[in-house]
Image (cartoon, rainbow, N blue to C red; front, side, top):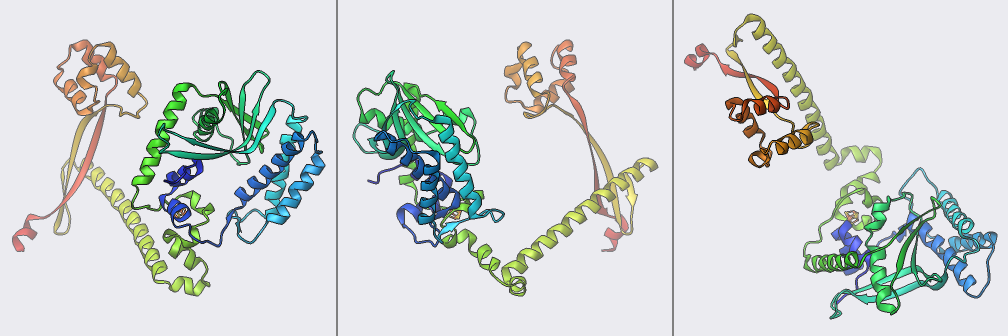
Length: 401
Ligand code: SF4
């Protein structure tokens, strides 16, 4: 049975095909990782170095730490690193990494807030008592405060700062807390800490026993979903721009193949031509639909002016009709909540709780509720008028054919 991790499950949740490429087929790809992931790894290297030195009581200076970061960056950089955002260069990411390290260093110096127990700590644990659902995780830093509270630290270099509610529902560090509980006996109070180093901001959260149990169950359910999966379908989205399997992914076969062609070959490609024709026809159809709408309005106005529902054309006839129906605010309408509150307050909610607008309209039409309620209900209703124009061939034409 495979050992799962948060990132393994996250890959499956993002795209099942990517999961298959990475964890089942272990597919070869010319892209090793995105520049964002590379920058994150180098910042992690530097912060690990900072705390490793501190463990032997050496406090490295910020300049030394930045020099270490620069050195690691140079040594690890290679051609397989993908810069998806073409408006940025490698130097921009390098500078961003420096900023992240500087932010962290200046915020926490002299780094004595808690005692470090482990760096890049590997946690192996089970989600069930039989050891059927095995997990593994690597914690950036595990620490303990003097009051016995454990801290699980995670460094994030992402360019987006999540909301507190995202931290409160985060699965990754919740799983780490489960792992920590199986590693040491005295783990009672645990604080989960995300250092969003690019923003110089931390998010802190805790978990109740119920929340831990729920994440445990949900994760088992997700593992079961992975193990049931047979098709591993691609899930195309903005994340494809950073996916290292894009060069071997069938979704992007045509897009990436024609992107590399010179302009004349690009235009001659059968797929490009078909899509161009389709787009052209669609545009024509939209224009035609618009023209039809305009003509429909003109016929309606003409019929109204003449005071007749039938307008004669050349062998064809337009008949104009008007329908009126009572409309109530839909579930997303502005007045919906107010209407629901009114119906509850007059004890009529059960009659229309599925919010059948047609039923409400019928009640108004038949005035089947007491007059004062009908009057109140009427305040939420509006009259919708639909006018249609239908074409039919003229009688003379019909008899001729
Ligand atoms: S490129 Fe997109 S669709 Fe293809 S494997 Fe990667 S994430 Fe999935």
